Image 1: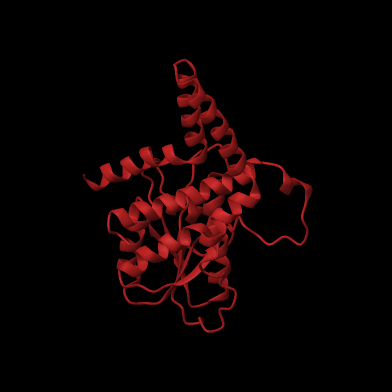
Image 2: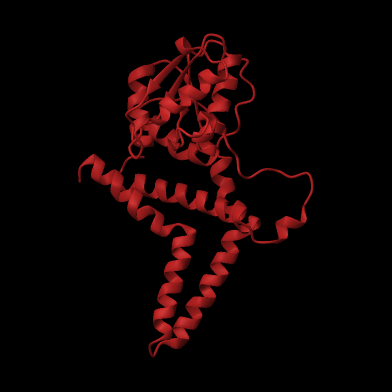
Amino acid sequence: MEMNEVFLFKKIVGPIFFPVPLVLGILVLAFILLYTRKQRSGRALVLIAILLLGSFSYDVASERLLRPLEYSYPPLTDIGNLQDIKWVVVLGGGHTSDPKLPVTSQLSEASLCRLVEGIRLHRELPKSKLILSGGGFFDRVSDAKVLSEVAMAIGVKKKNILLEEISKDTEDQARLIQQIVSKDQFILITSASHMPRTMAFFRRLGMDPFPAPTEHLVKERAAITPERFYPSAGGLRKTERAFYEYLGLAWAKLRGLI
């Protein structure tokens, strides 16, 4: 398949295996069986779907799935030995171009977290420039362009920003960023759960960036709150994030990319 076809294939097929579509698929199959001679199997599948949805929605279960991904690399808090770093690379995490909204509201939560961390590190490293990476396959404006507009709106100088606007996915970003940084060392910023897959792509090309994970969904709490004992959309979101990354890792390994 051509690269664009592969990209579309994974974007269309991948979400079928996310928690909500998976549970709904089981329920559809269950209801079909309930109208056949296999009613016992149908009832069993209904129970399985309910148990899965409940498990996926509990923080205890969802965080056990997500934690190994998010804490594969520690946060970059000590940059005392990185003062000569030339590049701070921020991978875009999605946006929606809506001119009725302020540009800060057009970025996804992932993109906004990544950008804020990038700007924080850029300001602490006076010799650095920001590389903002991300294309716009499903949008007329690139991720990188929207990231740059937000960065400049909150004080980053245009001369300190470079854009990579044609990548479709993380594999593309690694290849295109290598063309910019060459053999220079650099800091790489993406969501914590996305970092294992990202580092695998970059290292496969011979790069060894300093990882700076951000947007951690699994956090240590000082106290246990009552909400922890109930299923929630927040728990389901963590499970979906874990599924997304584990599927991404499996797909990359299947294609021999990492």
